[in-house]
Length: 129
Image 1 (cartoon, rainbow, N blue to C red):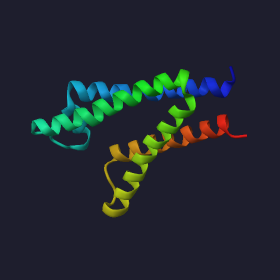
Image 2 (image 1 turned 90 degrees about the vertical axis):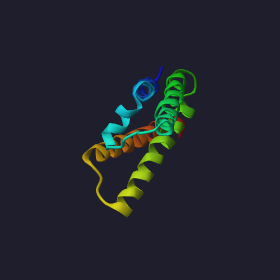
Image 3 (image 1 turned 90 degrees about the horizontal axis):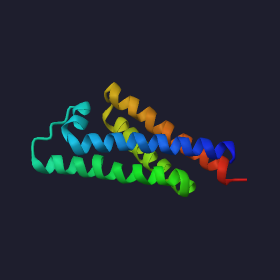
Image 4 (image 1 turned 120 degrees about the vertical axis):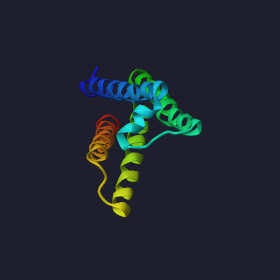
């Protein structure tokens, strides 16, 4: 097995586990996820939406990335780059129109940008000649 393939597998499993961690937190206690950004989930619909997005979406992404690490690396890397890139786009747009967010959000911007760039780098290394 090529070194880049091993690195890709490790990367995808780690990202999948990170998404899984968020999903589990959101399913068990959606308020705990939103506490990081000072949002209060004060009704059933708000908790339902948080469980659906942070819980359900992250769970399915996590499971696919872990599966993809072994059965669909290219597709998993594309998904990872799109997911991270979407967050980066939204955060940069928000910063442009509203200004500087908290350090928590800046940290996540850096994490999501890194996720996107590493995914694109691995795609390029593995699938272009």
